[in-house]
Image (cartoon, rainbow, N blue to C red; front, side, top):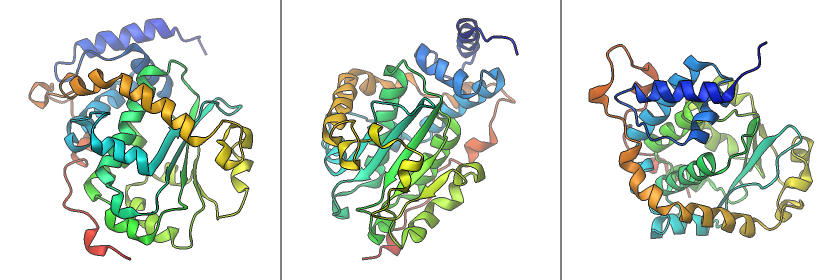
Length: 291
């Protein structure tokens, strides 16, 4: 197989992007390189993924607009949740990401705000971290997730989150771990299942509380000290990422318009059927709220 000239491929995708009247043209080089890398330098796949990436964002203003890192809503999310990329990668060069509720009081939790914050953190990493990993491994800690969580889920936001993270983000998902999984995790997982791609659902592993089965896949030493690792305290790692996100405040405040898709300018014949699935869904699971 011939060696790939990343510089040339990047120039090609930038040239293509500039000729798409409906897509934004001011896109960070590192982000474009991530698309090429995650699509294994298949130009056609990269083009479709880039288009879907920006189209989903434009169809989800509640998740991708009015994003101020200093706003009370975003600060509240960071107070009650821990979401953080870990500093060290696995030996396979996979990036590990931890997400957990650190406060069991779900009355404080807003699903849309949490997803918005998650995407802000992702944007920070995808545009600021110039080391491109060979894969991604999210770890969801369900220790503080009760059945009441079902009543907090916004169906429309969940659907967009699932589609965006599985099909539009320039990453390669390698494993998904749910740790401290309670006995009722199946009921919570049932909400996500309709939106899960088959190949992604095969990557998910559930780990019961008080077990060390996670360490079979993730080296314990790269985890935070709360998980018996050597990466330092969760709060310290999280604070570093919050600082990076806050440093991009001007970027976030102007990004609404810069990364918008103008559907009126989309060339005829250039339409991805997947985008139709993103259209707004009614309501949430509030009627199913369980105490």
